[in-house]
Image (cartoon, rainbow, N blue to C red; front, side):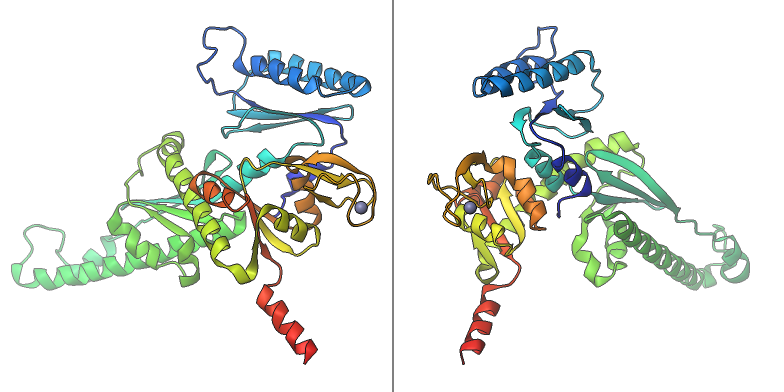
Length: 394
Ligand SMILES: [Zn+2]
């Protein structure tokens, strides 16, 4: 996923500012208090940050902290989470329907967690089918909404008269009934095949129009197979079948039933991504330092990192080059360097170099962590570079 426009906007907010990811989900630890947990957390976290700040910056920090606290004291949360960006020239609120982790940062806008939420919750389509029709829904950042609806209306009244005769009556003549039923079922099958194909077409259009990465097809197994086959071959890899008849459920009930499946699917995608990253040696770089170097040299197309990855880096004040070495001088230009964290600089770096960012959790993260926590697909595979070099030399 390339850095989306809304993140680009937040990246431009003037620093220093306070970024607060606030979770409204109670953990049960402070159940008996009247103050919401997030306010207790905020106070504790703010004290830790304040200790690291010098006088003039301390004042700016306390001002934005007070402003944020005042807002949160009277806030009536309806969402699972909220991100507050508070600075001398900024006040932006991003409500989220996803579980967020409490996080308080001072300095540049802290967007790494937001990128992770976007990466783990890619928008997808859901098509619910039963014998009477299909419902089209879209799932975007924790919100399930209905889209257009397509009914499988099969009008059999005309066939009865003209071709199938007395098919529907129990007392029809026995001799001809078998063949009439064949004709009828053949017609029904043909009609359903057209409806399935129309459903598939509509689903493909929905995904293209709204940038949905995957399509979940939900219904009884008997219906799913023929519908899945109606999708164009190249699209089928994006179709995930869930063989359950959930057609009678409302959108909130559906969300409750489907969300665990979507999370599981996202984890599987992450695992597959890391597996292919580690297997595709000619096209990738793996490891913290190597990946950071290639990223800054504009050689990376897609970067993959673990959700909690962070490290202290030194950034050159004149040419911006950064790495993990403790050297106070820049290796590129000899300029002075200051300390930054990977989490602070990564979204900006990814945007500046037009790199796609994928963040992985769970087992995929453990596997990547063992390789340094980061890896990337190169814009140009190493072998191709090698072949060109050989050609030039000969
Ligand atoms: Zn430099």
